[in-house]
Image 1 (cartoon, rainbow, N blue to C red):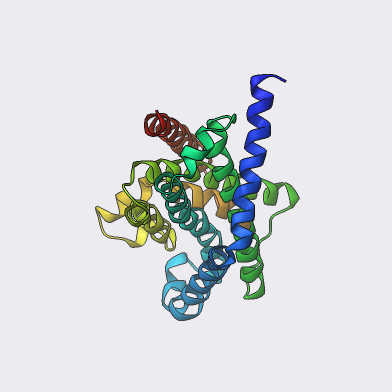
Image 2 (cartoon, rainbow, N blue to C red):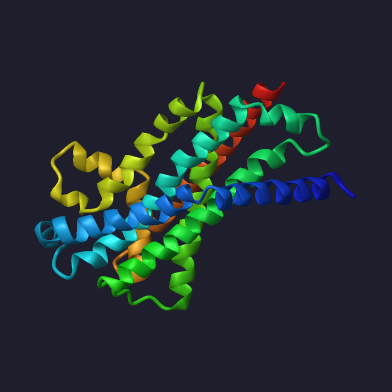
Amino acid sequence: MSTATYALADTKTMLRRNLLHAKRYPSMTLSLIIMPIVMLLLFNYIYGGALESSVGGGEYINYLAPSMMLMIPAYVSVGLAVLVATDMTKGIVNRFRSMSISQSSMLNGQVLGTTIQALIGVVFMTLAALVIGFRPNADVLEWLAAFGLITAVIFALSWLAAAFGLVAQNPESASNLPMPIVMLPFLSLVPASTMPVGVKQFVEYQPFTPIGETIRGLLIGAEIGNNGILALLWIAAIAIGGYFWATSQFRRRIN
């Protein structure tokens, strides 16, 4: 077997470990599903009446739902950072080092496992949005493109979250480092045009705005413009930067 084949087999083993961990401790998975849905209901039914006029007519849920789907990729970054920090501080990594396994598989399994769990959360979020009135007009290819984009966002943020977990001194500090990422999707719940100067420019150029506008365009037919290109560039930058930061920190911690 080649080195790449061994690495792939070890990644599958670490992915299975991550998923079994989620199965044994279902509270995190349930919170990943329940909390974003609670936020969806809160913004739609509590703030929706006041915010509906800001989206230029139509049901606010149609504007809200695509942006809320990005809450889950941001939300899981906290859990993954804590998971990585916990593994690094509890000695499990030293046990893995004594075994004949690919070092890269440790992070690969955690990132892939988190991506799968987050996609489950996005599916439940979408179903909840449809129940309360979300009415997309996307065809099959547009749905696939939207979920492909969301998957890429989850994957990119997962590598960044892994890096946060590796630089944190303990799981408690790891839970705080991704908090700015968690807050950014909230800025795309209303159009940037309604915001004051300074805030408007920040919102327009933060990564979740073009990503949210692209998903919104795919699902409800809003104009995408150059947001699609900007979204892909942001995702690529986050994924590449997060990957190299995480892997370099991991090598430094275990050597």
